Length: 224
Image (tube, rainbow, N blue to C red; front, side, top):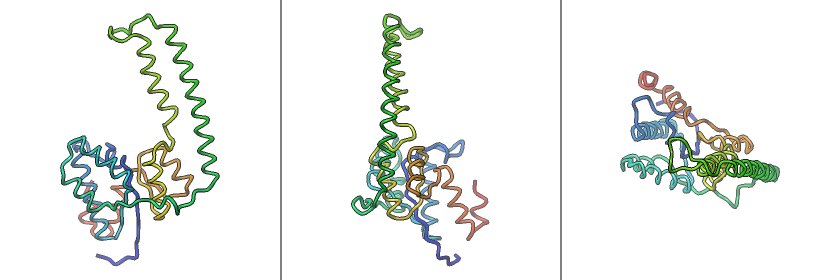
């Protein structure tokens, strides 16, 4: 092992573990998580690359993995190699400009959401007596409501910071001067505004392999 002064930190999002982008074509979720955690452990031992999660993200990920009947081995490796740390909410400062930007963005999204709702109400009024073809139990109004939910959710939430878990992730990354690893477009947008380094989840395993290949190219460059 080559001695290097490298000290990298990353804060990991739930989406890194769940995205199909880190899996090969015949790999299931459990196998992908185990492979990722093995990479994280090797990177820690060889290069002292540390990976973190705030408790809110850890709880969210653990619940999702348990719902998918993932084995205890995955959860044990997660506990061992990914450090759980609460962000220093009272110490990390956020520029006022970012808060103003967030308020303006949410106000604009609410206005767009209202327009989506108005359009749905008019459509429902025009077709409330009809039934949906091939779905006798569903009226056109039911379909309009279903479509409204999807469109309203996308209008208000897509590409925006919309949960405490997301906020904890960014605050912890800022506190640690760490890179953010996520597939969430909203987190990426705000990582840019915070001036944080970030990496899409799909690119994280290749990055770790490149670091490891610097010490053992025969092993790590042969892997996918």
